[in-house]
Image 1 (cartoon, rainbow, N blue to C red):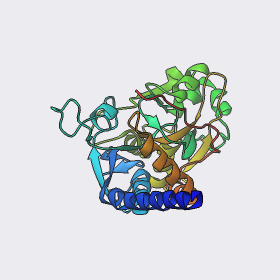
Image 2 (image 1 turned 180 degrees about the vertical axis):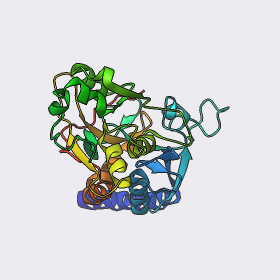
Image 3 (image 1 turned 30 degrees about the vertical axis):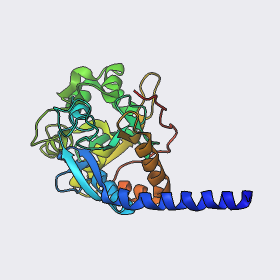
Length: 289
């Protein structure tokens, strides 16, 4: 009798699990994304976030639905945490369910396990008198006149700026904003244009953005020097996907997809010329809130 009871529970569980699939298949894979943020996402759906979202939706048998909003302050509030009907205080239906690219230790969302890790890169345009630089320290050791001619792009915040300050290069750098708020332009596109126009000759920039700039430029047009973390200045960061705090079921589903599709995810990311490093950091567990 005990064996029959166990078997009966097994069959019922199997039937219940089987009945879940069609429900999930009817759902949409609802992604929160920036409409103009190469190489991450665009409305043309040609960013690596778009490609990975397509892969996951296909695996789940779902259609993708995007909520578009510029990647700037308030992004999570206006997308992932925004109810479809803002008048319903207790609404359980939100504009989107997944942010495809957040820091693995972000406290803005419940994060998955990391699916890639990259590093900042010193990107130098070739043929402008700096081809002999093989590491970042050589840049810091240049004579003042040569430093001024380097025309280094400097962002308003980030480890690249901290490094430039530490090595006395702030005064010879050209300032840029990390988030312009311009819906017709993004940082990667601006840096790409200014490098080509020779307004700047080099930049310390996050790996995915470096990959975009390299892909848009002439073949072998740039020297790429990976930055190495120093005391107080980390350059390598693990990236994950984010869901709403408390949405552990979706987090687990995404973790499973990440684990099962590691090779394809890596192939997609590498096709965007993004430098990858070994993932060393796991996502920080979060309490429901």
